[in-house]
Length: 581
Image 1: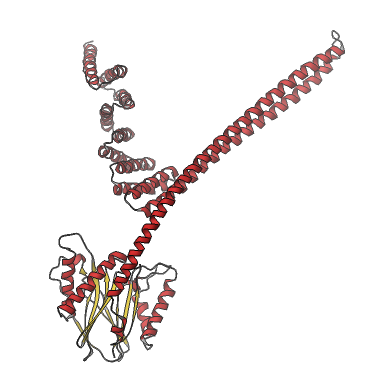
Image 2: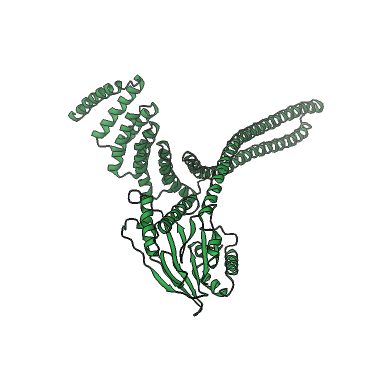
């Protein structure tokens, strides 16, 4: 008895304070009264240790507040629900309450808290391996990051969700993820990716709408079939009535109270009435069926018209974006072509090398401008030649090639440094200094094959930064490889301030041939994803070593084209061959 009195008093006290707190939030009177009742029940079941009933009323109170936009109170109730579910180990309850809290924070634009609770739901879903719930959680997280906005982070979660949505074959979720990715990339300024994902979104959207139209059409056909079946049933009833009429006519002959003529007239009237009733019923069924078909057709064509308008508007937007992109592309291409002219201007003039050596140069940029370059200079009786492979290709690589060429001119032609190893060491220092690699995260660099040729003694001094030198000895008929040091110029080795390179001195004679290259040719793949490779290059060189240098070039280029076929060029390609006179 005392326990019951205590519960009643405690309920009234809680209801009083709850009413005061609700009034402070300007809660409507009706909602306030309903919440007070729920709070009383919640406290009662908590005291009686009935967690399932306590959860029921906590959920009712939470949804009442949520539906009436009392978001803070709704979150408080759901957090109490979450705590009870965690204490009882109710996995499904934890998942639901965490997602509800996340959705409320999302509605109130508190996206950081929303993401925390959505991730909690994701963790539960992963523990239960429920792929549908995992995908939904990934979608919620991606959309919340999109609202922050944090488009890169949103893309990361969207890509994970997209793969899982494909795995469970949920096309509607696949369509949604494609839409998120298209929007994110548009906001990031990556129009190419945005258009790619928008096209995927549009194709799946078109397919799903076609399926919806098929469903509507199928339902329409089902209604028509039902009408036809009812018509057949009516016709069968009419036949039965006619049979009954014949039986009645037979029985009339035996009835003595009525005359034959009166009986026939009566039956005829009844038959006509039944026939008219059947015809009216059939007419109503047919009319209803036709009306249903007409309405479905109107709905079908309305949907088609709306879709057509949307597609036309989207097409106009895409065409406008395409025109803008075309204009931007023309401007960019014009700039890159101009940059190509500048880059070609810094390359050695072909005659400079040909005046001293019989030679060939294979120079194939992957893009309009190249990250590879070759460099040549002559000081008195010494000729200098380098094949350089800069980090990247295209415009970034071209910038590095301009820096590299300028620094080599400064080191050799202005400072008169002629020892290859010292030239590479100083080049390394200046690249680090130019790109401020000790202060920044820049990791760009270059691989170099550098030789100095004494034109009097025919002695070769070679130094390499991760690039080898190939030498064909005419006396031994062998193609030897001298490996360079396993260090790049600049890049990840920039912190090694005392980086030193080694010289390799080789005595050569008339008829010996030197080959300098980047890794673009040997790394090129074919349709079977196989590399061209160093062994193949060595074999081609040896098979054609007796040919003039320009003929050697033709054979190498032909073998490369036959190997590559329609495959895209993978990297910039540079190969230089010079013959010692």
